[in-house]
Image: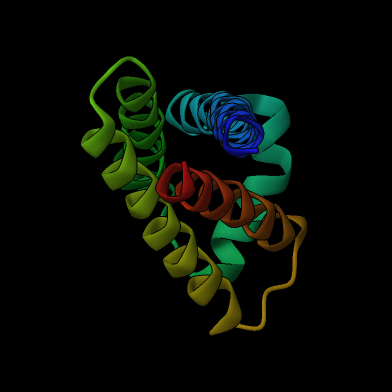
Length: 137
């Protein structure tokens, strides 16, 4: 009876770890792409991002720092968490959550409901899921 419970606990632990790794990898990929797209001002992204920045009152010069740099730093921190420095990964997930809460506030204060607003909601969800799964495993 007890060995069945131990097996169930081990399975749940493996399931949580797998969910965390997959979610963290998706979050890393999304923030790495988004960060580098902002830093390099990738043309297809700028078609949507440029008008959203103007509406929100955010200078385009912020694309390198803080916008792009913070996203890339968050992705790097999550990767370090996966590679064996768990506290850095946890801090990175929390940092990304704070970043996207601030980004959403920036859009809300000027009633900007552009595609960038809804994309930020998705990024916030990824960061929150990564943190939650990290803390649960």
